[in-house]
Length: 112
Image 1 (cartoon, rainbow, N blue to C red):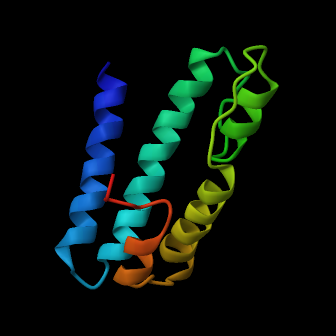
Image 2 (cartoon, rainbow, N blue to C red):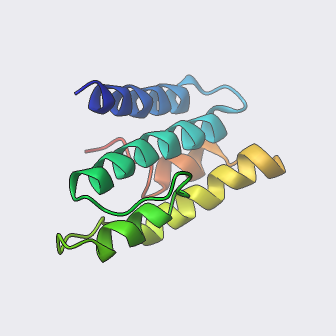
């Protein structure tokens, strides 16, 4: 249960960052959201006994779940690929996304 609460905390922190409006708000929101999604993907993979490496990369969770005997799949792989690219661009390359870009993205919607 505490892992789900941690995931929810990371998601809410991402939304709060986005709403803060400071110069790095969009990038920080994207980074926090990617952390939340990765934590949830890891839990989902574990719940179907998917084979994970010790240091499984973010998008490998989607493949591991699909290859499991559960017959289940994690949704939104294309959107999560875009999210991960945005995080890498912000964190490693210094590309700061705009607030409107982050707010309108499929992976950081706050209207549901």
